[in-house]
Image (cartoon, rainbow over all chains, first blue to last red):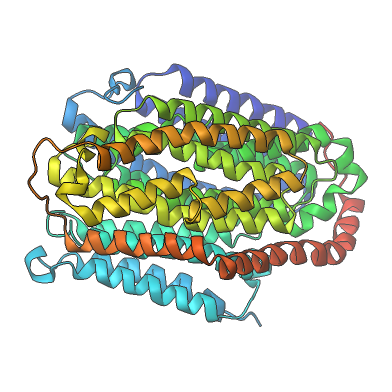
Length: 100
Length: 502
């Protein structure tokens, strides 16, 4: 049986990759994929810990998190489409109408 | 048998949201502002039911419907009702009025769930429900580039913040083996948790950081000025008051009912958040030309003021009551401020502070209300803002955070400068053109309601303080009572499952 700590390390690595991706990438769709990576890092941790504690709570979290992530993405893609309609580009570097 | 009656306000608002979305299909000419009134009446009804319903902890304690959640509901529902009334003025111009009110109502349900959360899962779900609805609301003026940009900024940063909360929750679950608040307190005093305290603080820091985004505390505030400026004013009014109150409700619930044994790390975190929020928020607001953007930075500073009380010890009754009271009066004050921005924008097409120039000649009643709002934000004595700030700083002082109170007092003086600059524009300068401006009656009514509330709370704060104290004792009682009940359960589960030690 794989020790729980391995799963925790994997989830930590995935979360870090997600955070770095959000900071580095310029396309909002790719940024969104990185946010999904962050959410899934948490999901892996929950599933592994649920098994570790022999509870169903961990799995229950994941079901909720998946539903929430789907809702978030559907609203997010809608916003990205509406941005593309107003300015023919979705590069986040060009989102600079408002600054200091 | 669980008693489901206390859930009635939540069910009522959910049905209201769906009904309003359906009614939105009626042509705008035939409903003439009815949707806003329906939403406002529904919010008032939910508020009444919420105040009358018995206390309960349905679904294995996932929700805690007690005095604290009732006090939070007052804030959220008051904001929802006033903003709905003001929105009736816009209703015939908006293409998707039904969806607007539906999203606003659903967001309120999410905030109410945050206030009533009994564990990290309900807190996360409430946070997401309110935030996702706000993404769509921030981008509601689809044709405007600024609104779309505000929506994208809120979307990306909001999603990251909620992912951070979820990851923090997973770490806390790993250390404690539970995410119910009352079981967490008991599990924390267990030796296993003490052995992994670094991981525990790491997790709690993540959760606090995610919620700090929701309340727009520095350094998680970068979205706030941009989104406040770009989003429609009516949405910003909700975002800057109810949504912020939701973040604080979750923070108070979490930090108040989960007593971390060695509190130093978390209180240091709150002290830092509070101090830099007050300093950065107020200093950045000084140089702003755009009225909504200035209010955005002032909102960051106001979060800092509330955090001073939290830093003084989240579980004390003074902290919780003063924070709730401040959030309530801040809801009225800031909603009114953004409605003034909306009225000025409708009349002049500009969001600049200079657009307020000579308002006392162009619309005397609006000018008076705007000045009351600015004085209340600045904390001038007879008004609500002064009383609230006094309670907050007293709570912080008694909790030993004298340095923070000092920073708060000094930055409040700096803040007075930019609030009084607005008053100067309104009263001391003469307008460029003397014509009267027209303001929609609905907006005038909403602003007058807020102004009356500001004066009432400022002159007679007693009932609101009592409400806050009842809420505070509810949070504490549940945490202490359940500590005794939950302790043997956790101990028993430990025999079969050794806790993780990273």
